Length: 359
Image 1 (cartoon, rainbow, N blue to C red):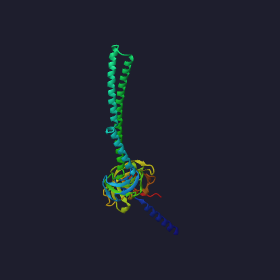
Image 2 (image 1 turned 45 degrees about the vertical axis):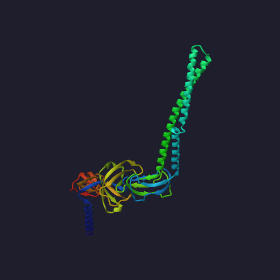
Image 3 (image 1 turned 120 degrees about the vertical axis):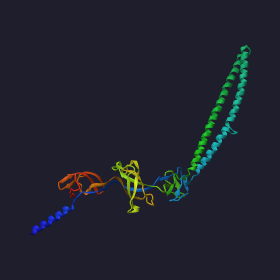
Image 4 (image 1 turned 180 degrees about the vertical axis):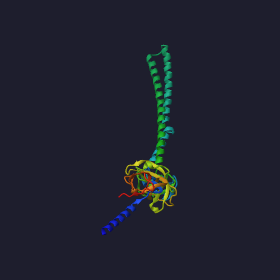
């Protein structure tokens, strides 16, 4: 009698355990999504650098201050470019003076040309006069050859001086143009000591204080949009092919515990980050929070697909990814959408089929 009671108790407990693990598939709305971590950043965020070295003289703005495009941000001191610009100006003035000033080099060459023309004219008269005499058998051959030689030398000398004039003129013109370019470059370098904003936005960070050394390798400020923020997400490479623009995004921010925000995918960066094997994806808020700061973190789900009424089972009841235990034994099913808890059953069982949780 005692053994019979024990057997009955075991049978009841086994039946209760068996019934607890037996369920029916249920119809529900199902959303499939890709999970991602989230970082909030201002739109058009960039780091401002100096393109010259020196000492930071003054920050014209403060952090969290709204600025306009081309507004001065930072002044840098370095006397070398100023001295270079002054030297370039002196060189330009000298080049202009040599080209067309009162002490121009060309003026002396013009005098040489005038002298060469007079000598050529004189030697030409003497040569042709002696030539006529020689044709009349008057005079000596030596006098004729001498006059002819002087005439030919006068021609060559005149051509040489004229060529010298044109060559020198071109050289002086080139020197003036080069001096002008050097002076313009020196002026631009002087202007580069003022760092200006490239956009209408807000100053989110200043990295240097007055008196500190500035170089071209270190950022001086961080500037970005004052009103527009983007949602930066890192998507695993196995999921990136499922992401496309304008997909809905559900966002949870740590700073807004319990609140849910929505957005849409706006940009997909095609280059993979080899360090963490992820791709960067950006989204924009549909209704952003009133207050946002750069670097706010959270998590997001990018909605891949959504169906209102589908037959589902808990994923914990699935065996080998495509089978379930039924009253008829191990049954193969075809699956569809899934989330963290449930998976869609496309075929293989019905809503009236009991399934059992695997041990």
